[in-house]
Length: 234
Image (tube, rainbow, N blue to C red; front, side, top):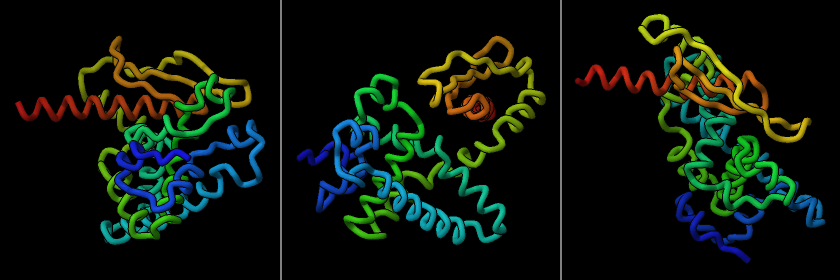
């Protein structure tokens, strides 16, 4: 039985029962391919982890943003725990390389899919909760997910904010281009790029062209803001 020492070091939590962590990393495709018993995959863990994530993020926003109303806090929470944000965290922690996938899922790029990565991260949160209770799950979420708030809150308004930034500067016209599509017909992944003039400023991918465009805008916005901040320092 694997003990996933590298992963436990990455996530900053040592499991008393590593079997829980292994269970959290079993994708349904792997369980189906290997004829595993019902509920052997990580979907129940994902359900639990999603609930713990919602509780901790709601508590965080309630206490740290006392001037925001329910709608504002809901929008902010959605930005912090959206699929793209969770997939980014999963990538930072190298969770993807530990996920158990079927051969077919592996061959079609499942290890890089945002949906699989974000679900795996929520499953790991569920496993931490089962192994150690709320305190370590809370600590993990606050350290790895509830960070870089200012930038993450831009995500849902990224296209609008980017358009405004480009119009106010001398960047050239903003446009988006689709670069490719991958995956089977029922589960495609679209790839988009954001340009100002001839300059590539951001890339994104998603289950729809709109989602891929949104991420490309977000990446581009972060880049241009970083460059403008650097200019102010000089």
